[in-house]
Image (tube, rainbow, N blue to C red; front, side):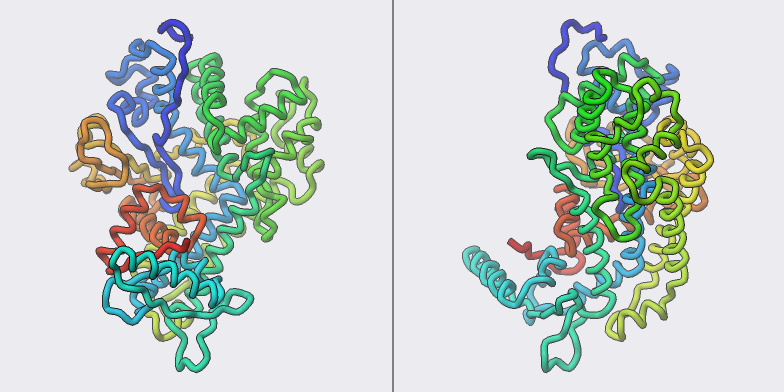
Length: 533
């Protein structure tokens, strides 16, 4: 394949981008000058309209780096699409939409409340949802552990007010109190329940295969890799696509490739050594279409549906008829074998739920929020307006994607056609993190004038030459999409609450961003998190 001599071990670059439901857009991370043109202008590179020279790729490692950068937008864009059409991704986004209308007030109120008697630096137990579920004895033991650790460092004790909760998780004030503390208001309870649902969704979607954990994120990752392979195959040839696939599979087993390994095990069991990529894409799409909207997060989970296909379901499609069957025919056979809601019924229900919550949240007013919160919490109109804009943006994108799938279901197994039809660049903001000296020497002033956002001192790791890190957000061209600055602010609001309230979602925030948000808590709220051991 390459002209650089015999194959050597190839390491695919990591951390080139990301999809974050806190920031509903596409994130690109540029660490090397060589990645700038392929990552930011892939189609211009392929058309020979940039200074990038394909002839400069002289080794397998060069090609792996190039193809990873070239298909970066395709990969991250597929994540966005999958969250919009899949019931599982839709459930995550709808939980976020519910949180968005109250999260600013809940978060602000949490830090405005004097949770302990001292005027010194205030502390909040984290994850707060876990603290709320502790018994009185468990809290006492945790307080002793915190105080012992702080005394050893010469720091003053903490003095967090104990609370009790009933069996359903609804906070109750201690007997004899004239009024409940601020964080037992209905809004705070609603926030805890929303995080409960998010965490339960993640936990029940995780399955074991031998000693390996397979999460829903692994299925989404498989879908994004297959989108990359589609682009590589159509632009660089099937041989390049197959080599890239084997490089992905040859990497250490992780959530980035474990779902693909599972799928290929099933294909080998039923079909031999052939690798029909259309079938792989159909497997992922059908796995993502389980109806979790009814509250049953287990059996309809993407991981369990994919396990079924790999172990039994593939036998329903004869090997010589894979390409002859339409995606509708394939899905119908798998639906009949698995039971439950059909793929199209799940899709319709997802869109109906998106619309219902959008209607509900657009009707939320300051008066309504105040009645939920109680007199002690004054809702923030700025947060509420931002939440409504963010929710409207997500629902508009979801309505568009669902409409295209119902019109042409084959797009579910044709990721390039789907992304071309939607024109993701026009529909989603793009966040670029890079060193100031990289990324084509971008004209930052022009980007600001166009409605983009440039942030200095961002959270990305240092790039080549130790340059100052910059972040830029290209604004969406769509009139319905949230603007760049608002998208970034909404992400920070969600991240703050995740760090405070949630156990599993705390771990999902990368370390650099954690440090950034913790510094914000100290500087803005004069507060610090106490992590539960």
